[in-house]
Length: 362
Ligand SMILES: NC(=O)c1ccc[n+]([C@@H]2O[C@H](COP(=O)([O-])OP(=O)(O)OC[C@H]3O[C@@H](n4cnc5c(N)ncnc54)[C@H](O)[C@@H]3O)[C@@H](O)[C@H]2O)c1
Image (cartoon, rainbow, N blue to C red; front, side, top):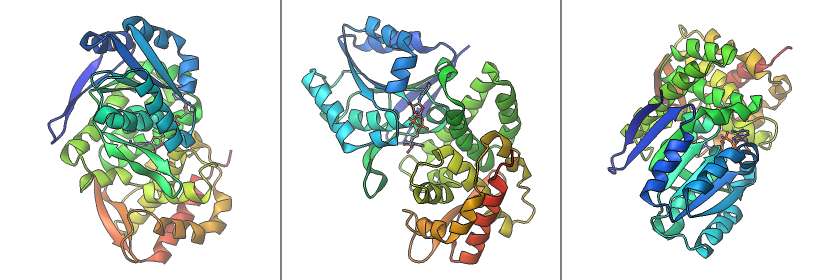
């Protein structure tokens, strides 16, 4: 049975979210029932190659299908890929009511979402996330955008999709490293909002049972929906979703975005942020998070020598004001708070702890 619920934002937009196994065909026919003349499909190159049956389904439902293929990787969130897609769409006669389908991970979703927001001042957007990270996080909440040479996600818009369809059959082709990327964000939800998720995560990691996987995706998606509904434009509590991310972004930037996938950096960042929280709340037991070291299998010890550089990178984060670092910390499990700190020695300790604990001695 598939799961359905809505995201309702202040600006009165309603997004329907559907989660299940094999919900693809019905959702595509529903979209085509609104307008089946023309469809603009923006699809990740690997997804196009690995799921030709799904592309065929879309082809069959519309009179005409234009396909924009997004090369795999973060570098596709660029002005040049954006321009190419806009050019393809306009030359093919896209109209204000032409559905735009985004099929891929967070890179495709962010790029396609921004294209949808800009084309003719907005065409209807339908997300079909194909990675765990995109299902539990990036497809929900309307943040779209591309990167600039001076930083990530600096150009973009808030633009809510009409529907988000999470068909877990896409995940059958997902490499283990990409599962781990999603796991980083799922563990974050466990920390900031629902500690009982940790047991469910254990089950899903061990058994890959589809019913439990759907439950896990649903529970994470509902957490994100709950936060976005209260703070669509990130003026307050939506920042809690950045728990561990100031550490993670610094790590990604110091390792040139090549050594760790985002979710792996998030995992290390979560350990750092929890240690930071523990300094004010000694009762916080971090061991539950450390149980996933053998799932991530990361090498981190050599970076202990680069802690000063990592701290400098934290200061370049968008969330720095004056000399203070703004970090999300846990008052207790499920209870995040925004904390400002000038205590560099403490931040240093957090890095050393995180890098030593996240290292896998396999
Ligand atoms: N908009 C938001 O709120 C938000 C939130 C979090 C992250 N993000 C963004 O999301 C992006 C990361 O997303 P991601 O982790 O999904 O990365 P991604 O889109 O790069 O996908 C990861 C890899 O998996 C491949 N892939 C995708 N689906 C597949 C499938 N079903 N089978 C096999 N391979 C598949 C892709 O080709 C790619 O190589 C970043 O750019 C980040 O900034 C956005």
